[in-house]
Length: 137
Image 1 (cartoon, rainbow, N blue to C red):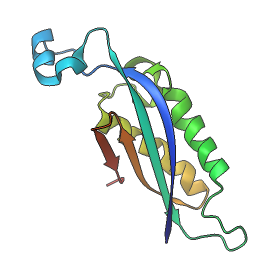
Image 2: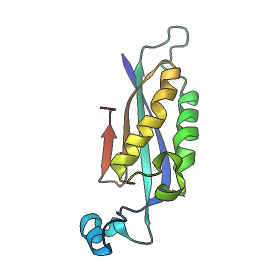
Image 3: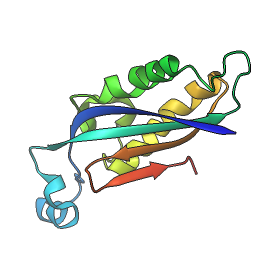
Image 4: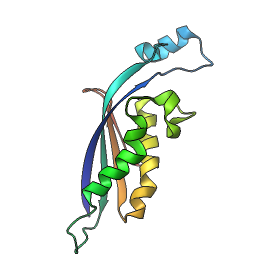
C-alpha cells in the first residue's frame, strides 16, 4: 500500500452561527466567527489517497487527474465563495472547519473509487495554528 497527497489552496468566507440562537449566545459560543458580516480564511487542503502502484505506469494515480478531480469537485466550488451561501455541498450544514472537511471527503470519495484508489484522508488547514483531519470514520 502506498499513499500520495496533493495540496491545493482556496480562500473562502464563512460564519458560524445558529439562527435559533440570539446574537449574544452566538457570540458567546462562536466568538468572532459569528461576525454578522462574515469572515474569511486562506485554506490549505491536503487530499491523500492510497492503493497499489500500477505496474504499467508506476503511478498510484496520475497526479494531473488527481488535481483535476480536486479542483473541479471542491476547490472551484469553494474558492472566493461564501461557504454558507454559495457551496452546493455545504447547503444546510454548519460551516465549521470540521464539517467542511467531512463534506469535502464525501464529495471526493466516490470519484477516487472510480479511479481504483481509496481516499485515505482530507486535511484542512484553516489557520497556521488550526487544522482538522478526517479519515472517513
